[in-house]
Length: 159
Figure (spheres, rainbow, N blue to C red):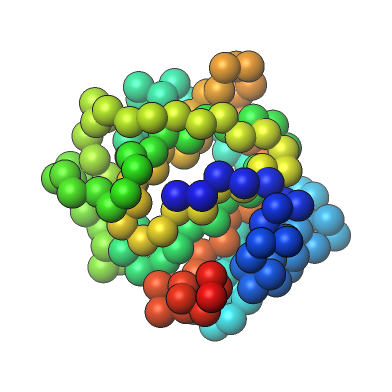
């Protein structure tokens, strides 16, 4: 997991920034637009969304196998739960084949980080995370861009 902001992301990971720039450009052209949009076939895509937030005890950690998960807060504040490193527990619900996601139970202990507009968080495949939690400032929704990059491309993004 990497927590950063857009300026640092741009300077540190220029290959990731290319994908982020496409999502930010789409948001800038139509801030109300939502939904999934391809960048590089099915290997890289992004989703713009506006989602309600829930109390952290109501959310479950999720894990992806196939995709790197880059989440950028565009408006609002969002709390993310996470477990450092690869998740080694059991799943309450597994949908890797259909949706590349599996969920833990709601009572799985984790750490938390609050992100505000202009912040980004990156979860590697296998890293458990709990998005869409109500942050300390108690705002009730967040607008964000989520970029998914297929695991096979991860090495070229960082090196």
